[in-house]
Amino acid sequence: MQTLAAGSKPLPATANGFTLLELLVVVALIAIATAVVSLSLRDSAQSTLERDAQRLASLLETARAHARANGVPAQWRTNSQGFSFEGLPRSNLPTMWLADTTRAYVAAPILLGPEPLIGPQAVALSHSAHAGRTLWVVTDGLRPFAVQSTPHNPALAQRQP
Image (tube, rainbow, N blue to C red):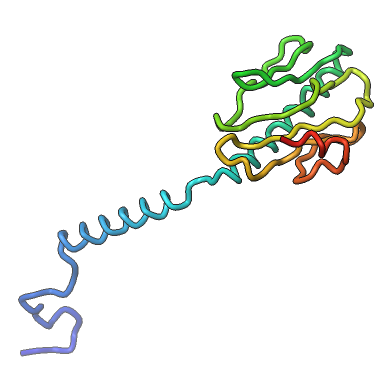
């Protein structure tokens, strides 16, 4: 005798649901789709250059603050392995670019202190593989170093690589 109480109906021989094999196929498809999307979203040379430029601006400001705090003259120079900070005592600042293809172009070493006013300075950054775009890390001597797409100084623009 059947009643209307819950659980009184017998289950059909085949219950509705997913088998373990179906769940594994779906999880595998999601993993493949995630891998394809992550590979297509790799950093471009543009964003790598921007990150190197922002990092250099921060490093130059840090070195400038250290030079002023210690009262020592400091300079930033490029070299074949990357760059170096000279004159800073116990400097733990990085000396390598984030990307091996980043290149810096300066007419003279960047002076960082110890005076509060250092004069206008600029560094042009580009990628050796993609020479089409140049970013400038500049200061007018009073304001902090900043990243710009142009040097905003006609004399510096003539030195562009």
